[in-house]
Length: 324
Figure 1 (tube, rainbow, N blue to C red):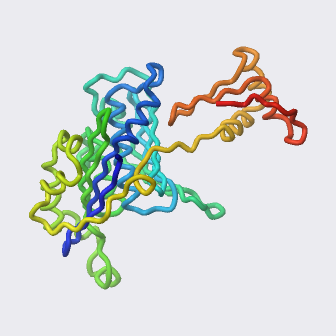
Figure 2: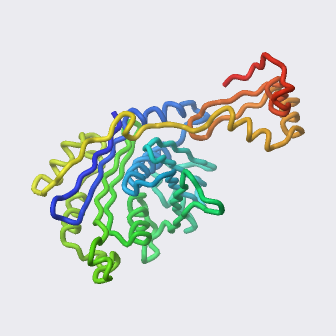
Figure 3: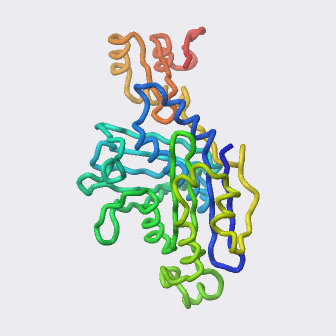
């Protein structure tokens, strides 16, 4: 069962989270199992890591809205997206336009010519008039312009720039599990922060507690993260540390796959294209078929359905054949 575990280190300015996406991640891949819809193995792994990272970041921020993690660049993977709602429901997709080698890492997929970027967008549920979503963007390279090969490194760099907080992020995914461990130094609070005596950026790299715990987290292998349960992982890593755990989030309160697509939304999109465009597709193909990029669900609109889209509600004839 997919689950999220939160914990703190008593008396230390460090918090952590561990996520394991199992049934929910397998459902995502099952929906894209057809040969025409399936992603190459490295892309599946990247999307799994993005889903795990998105859940960790959304839970860490406790943001009232959607967190959207996007990777885009100049390689065979033009775009990869993970969207996580405030209730930890997530969905992912990618646009692949070229061949992806089985051994491809981040640079080979998205940053072939150095143009790859990672964007994190926070889209509030209730926007005020004129309010735009917040977005932060970082390149897929380090401070020395070296290409970054792992998503965790990119997001650590992002957190350092955006929040001035030391962060360690370990991610892994295969076709069964997508998992992640986040360790982060807590922001300066209270009197010290109000008086400007200590700022978050002043402590970057200097907190001995975080540095020690980060080193311990860094010993976690990909195989361990994918195969061991949360209790075993945390016990192995931090058995000497003052770890305080909170109740795990599972089921309806935990991470799970969910897609917000609907027939109504697809119908609105078709209406925006205009009647002549849709009639042209009907004349050529006999019906309109739209597939959701996130969940793979196919929506079919026959000539009767299309007529209903462009007819005012009071003038529609009964007996529409509208179905998925």
